[in-house]
Length: 114
Image 1 (cartoon, rainbow, N blue to C red):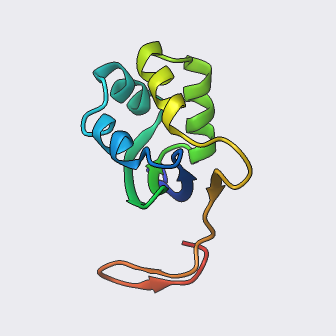
Image 2: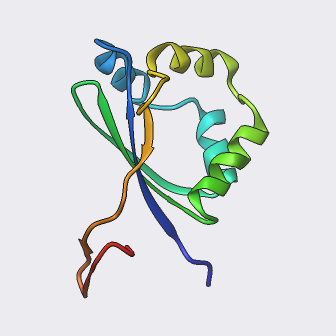
């Protein structure tokens, strides 16, 4: 059985672009959705507060390997990729991996090893 890896990230959108970002993500283009699945992404959820976005990604293989595979595939929908690049803030602290602290499920709880 292949292990499912869960990671969390914090990213930011450009000031004032959170509503546009949410609208654009109401439904991804099918080609983008399929490329995520092809790369091994099983689940990706995004929450926002102001201009900050919080992502929880479940994948097999490791999330970084899945994201690298996406980069190798290149933009499967260049128009959508260009739109997203106008919404997302790039710079120091704009894309950070969150450190697990504590978690639980229906049967157990665990510390930072998640």
